[in-house]
Amino acid sequence: MAFDYDLISIQEARDIARKAKAAQEILAEFSEEKINRIVAAMAEAGKANAEWLAKMAVDETKFGVFEDKVTKNIFASTNVYEYIKDMKTVGVLKEDPDKKIVEIAAPVGVIMGIIPSTNPTSTTIYKALISVKAGNAIVFSPHPNAARCTYAAAQVMHEAAVKAGAPEGIIGCLTKTTMAATQELMRHDDIAMILATGGSAMVKAAYSSGKPAYGVGPGNVPAFIERTADVKQAVADIIRSKTFDNGVICASEQAIIVDEPIKDQVIAELKAQGAYFLNKEEIEAVSRVVMTPRGGMNAAMVGKSAQVIAEKAGIKIPVGTRILIAPLDGYGPDYPLSYEKLTTVLAFYTVKDWHDACLLSIELLKLGGIGHSFVIHTQDEQVAREFIRKPVFRILVNTPSALGGIGYTTGLAPSLTLGCGSWGGSSTSDNVTPLHLINIKRQAYGLRQAAPGTAQLSNAGRFTSEDIADVVKAVLTQLQCKATG
Image (tube, rainbow, N blue to C red):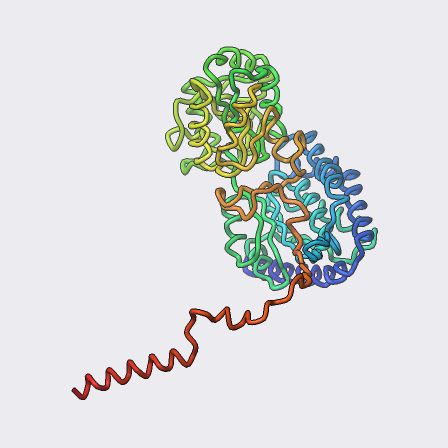
């Protein structure tokens, strides 16, 4: 029966890919005005359905925070739409009268969107919007633990798009979530590009499919509180970020690095704002619960509250505790909580100065966050600039990392796919937008005539075919003489 189910799922993948291809060929002929009307209707539908989709996501995945998932759905609808609505993605993009070059947008085709369980409905809304804005169709492959809510979000987007004039099938979603179906979509001839958000294995599979792909890596984000920081605000930002949807956004902080002169002040402020500091035995207990023996995270603890984690670890914590903090003396395999933890647990380090913070942050990033994000809280602009050299593509200053990284509290492009560049194994270092989902044609006019004699000059210093024939003849003659001599 399992084999039969795989075959059925493969057929479904083929069907939605073909349907999306046919729909995209129609959409490709639409005017910019018509596509903009469709995208506006989709954004409005995402916002209108934000609450019940959020509830469905929490109920199905069993993690996260309902109110924060509502916020993410609205962000994916409203903030993303406001950023892309006037973006030029159809027809002539620009003309350069001096160089006589015209740039014209061309849709990629059909996008395959891989959706994670951490942000299922918001990522679906976001990817649908940016794909259609760029003139593409999109078909979704959900995480098995978020299949129903992802399909529901895709249906909301599809119904709104079709009602506004889009062709039927422009947005599709697998209902039978098998690895066989996902692999079939990745390889299908009608899929032009893969937009992958999920675990490292899935992202690597996308890049190995032979298709162009955008994928994102893990984000083991260090947060440095420098001695000139507004400590109260810095702590508030970090806790807000790490507790937002219980820490499931990959840009959320994973370790606090504190400048030694303000250590006591930071600890006192963390405790005042609901943090609980674990002792050595409690760190070991939480490590066993949150992390696996191989160094990865226990999936059952993703997006769980501090109370749930403490209870699983057999620890009593005060009522109202928002975050668990593990003071660590090192990093790497002997310190499991120094790795990425998509939940309400933070590592905690003390350093002598910003130089040591630089060194430590690099080591933490090497554990799995190279290319992603780093956050610093400081009032010293010169120190902030020093961290531009860090091996990440988002250096966030005085802002909650999770919300700043996705462009909610910063001027970065609003996005739920954050590239990590070549350092992190990604094909882009950007927050992905519709501009990543178009091809650009260039029409170039002649500016100058080729000078007379160009062809002859280009051959100067080169052997002709006659020259080569003469050399070969001479060599053969010499060999023949030696043979007969």
